[in-house]
Image (cartoon, rainbow, N blue to C red):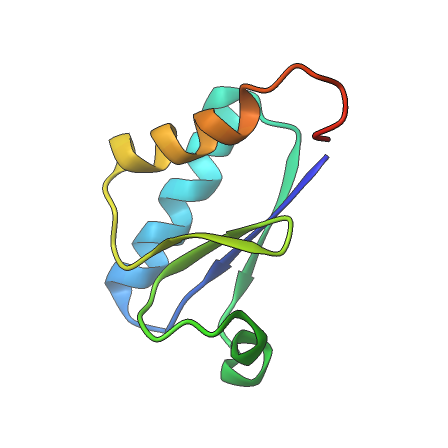
Length: 87
């Protein structure tokens, strides 16, 4: 199971981005938990200077606003390995 964190501020566009990630994870059938992080103290370890940001299994995979197609591409790449060792 993947652990996906969406680092966001309280602004509407960041919240919309988080909504999109949650929806796309469900649409793609990805076995993952999606958590919204809006506490700056919890964001510090990721060294992210722009929001929103997408973190998968503790690795930052996207920074800044990306559209739904780009979210699908990033999540599709993460979900495509069938080696059995990637989770």
